[in-house]
Amino acid sequence: MIFRGGFCLQEHTQSHELIPPKQRTRDAIEAYKRNKRNFPREVFNGGFILEKIASPKSTGQLSLSNTNVDDNPNVSFNYFSHPEDVQKCVEGIRLVEKLLASKHLTNYMSSDDETFEKLLDLSVRANFNFIPKHTNDTKSVEQFCKDTVITIWHYHGGCHVGKVVSPYYKFAPGNG
Image 1 (cartoon, one colour):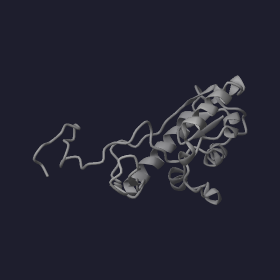
Image 2 (cartoon, rainbow, N blue to C red):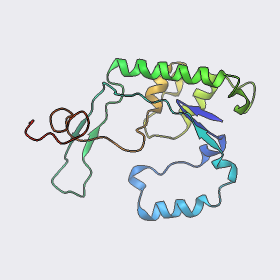
Image 3 (tube, rainbow, N blue to C red):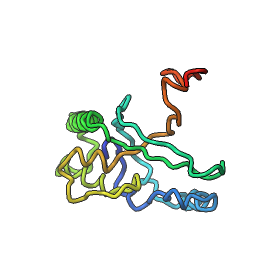
């Protein structure tokens, strides 16, 4: 199994890569859906342990590249640009390590010789995002966090919380 900063997948899934964003055409997605029917059933056995940073302090930028509504905006997420976010991630990974070492989860490991470091190494090589990896620095949990970061489900906003929307995501007219 591969546990990545939270992800837990069977090793087989490494060979079934994600479709890169610029190649995600309707035809490519339909072809992937057709082909996945031929994947071995074992590919889909597994689960997830996700480590999430709630209320990150890092902020990104969003700008329009032009006035065409069909074009994607320019987005810079700036993940982990605030040092406290990196520290929260490291603490979360250490908690995942403790969970995996518990008697309740050790039976789900593939073999007795799998160390947490080996699982981190496998996870960095898995293609869950398109960020260049630093495979020569897998002993650093901080670097692991940076190499395996993903945004889950959907992105939040494109406007300042507190200026355009309230902290509860309600429209705040007249606040700028």
